[in-house]
Image (cartoon, rainbow, N blue to C red):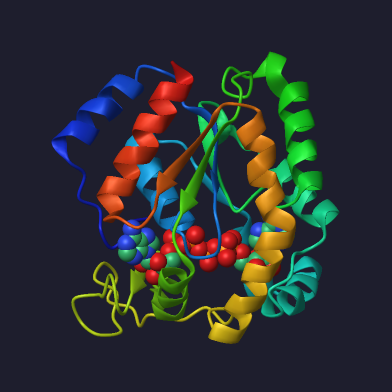
Length: 247
Ligand code: AP5
């Protein structure tokens, strides 16, 4: 998978080379809809070789396959509300049994409630003895972008249905209008990327997910980065934050 902008500076590459000597461990990307969690997760996957676990992508995969979970999730997602904690936790639990998480993983869009955060804390504590990555404490990075910019990012987002590259018609357009640079496929727009649904998602974020940010802030392995910069600069900020918090 690739992002539309993937230029990484020499300084960041050096930092990554240093980081490659260590186990990245569990990393959480937190932030409101459209801050760039998915975009940044894909950058970090390329740099660290650990998987992105996006609960939004997993749920959309279930919707596309028409599973029972997908049928339930679809209506909830269209309203900008959250899928029940128990269902999402179970989905993450299954994903964490796959062998590619041994050196760590990037959680994108999870946890989103205090119930999910407590579940994750307990899950990782229980797994700690068997896995070098999960024995490391979680590092949480919150990405900040203001409301007006978020709206532009959400309503302008387009995705490649084949390679999942993320574009934005205003900010990160493809070379040819409506066509993926990598696959040549016609780009698609997520059905929840409307202004109306975005408003609902933001309300949900403020009431249920903002307290999760405070939960991790209090645990001290926490950083905030400015997401309103070029993709490579946001990636550099995340990398240096993780390096500092893992030191
Ligand atoms: P989810 O898919 O997780 O949506 P989200 O959190 O609203 O986040 P987005 O995917 O919209 O944004 P992003 O931060 O990843 O931004 P991106 O990188 O794409 O969840 C969808 C729904 O699923 C939820 O509403 C809920 O119903 C359900 N769900 C998911 N997880 C759940 C959970 N744990 N519990 C319960 N329910 C759950 O970037 C956005 C745009 O900005 C793109 O166009 C991109 O090109 C552009 N962009 C990114 N970075 C930059 C930059 N630096 N400069 C310029 N443009 C940029």
